[in-house]
Image 1 (cartoon, helix red, strand yellow):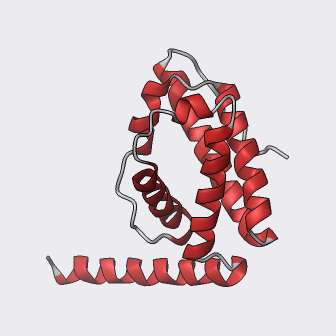
Image 2 (cartoon, one colour; image 1 turned 135 degrees about the vertical axis):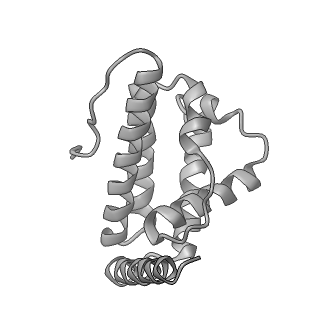
Image 3 (cartoon, one colour; image 1 turned 45 degrees about the vertical axis):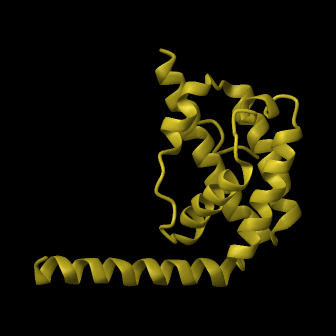
Length: 154
């Protein structure tokens, strides 16, 4: 690896660390908070009439929850622990707008229950962006066009 490339990577890591520290200081998000949010949220999802059947395909919930904790840690704390392809895993599920709306309703409710306001706001913003991205991709695969509609949700 060249010295220039090494220096660029080190600078990027330093910037990422500063952004992460800023997010932690502004929101109070911790790995424990992420774990509680994920556990409570997916407990609600599994009991939900619309989403429960979608998630019934999960065979090992302990493994799946660990993966989801890694995912959310990577999303909000830039930990880099998640290395999967969430879009590829969700596209075959034939999800539609109602699924994304319900997923967000439950997620937002859980984030507000578990997290202080600043942390909940960050989680909710990220979740809305994820929902829009997944919904647009699902529509594209089905031959439809979808516009982002969750980011501006109130």
